[in-house]
Length: 182
Image (cartoon, rainbow, N blue to C red; front, side, top):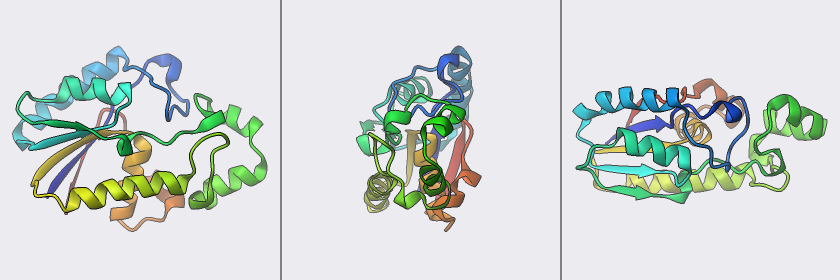
């Protein structure tokens, strides 16, 4: 199976450099342009099925990159993690609100992290892992997933046996394509 991992395009400037997990941010003009370029690279893959996060930036990316032939399934398991009270904040703003213990857990023991008022990393990882397990048992040979940086980091780091505390090493840029074969 060839799995095309697509990170949504760049978001509008007001959302850039912020933790916008569950925030329903739209794409920027440059993000839309990047997606048009991505569409051209996808044409040769003959994708059988597209799966997409229900969040606006992923849906907009899908609408730009998708050919008319392949069906689509919107799957809530592909949404980004909910950062709760830290949603839509820059990292420097989070460091002012978070305790040193919270920051240490987030950096060094992410499986123990629960975002205040949001989702736990363990819940997030479980839903992403459940999606992938189900996908790998499907009969598809070529699928595309349109989703978010956190989801893609979880998938790629799991496949490459990279521990969660080092998953940032495999964060794909916005508007990019990463291909995994299973």
